[in-house]
Image (cartoon, rainbow, N blue to C red; front, side, top):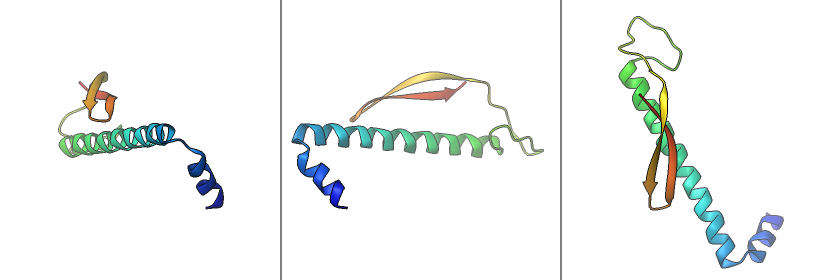
Length: 80
């Protein structure tokens, strides 16, 4: 803990805000990606590359989509 506290004490307000902004942006991206992947798996009734008799459809590639948030833009690979 000592080194973490020393680093925080040395940070300026601006660098702290930049670090916090990047951490929050990464957390939002991970949350969105996880939620969308779970939604796709629930719809398909199968995981990625999984072949089951209950499978409803298939993934058909992806494309990049930009998502604007209050924390800044996020790039997401969306399913076709």
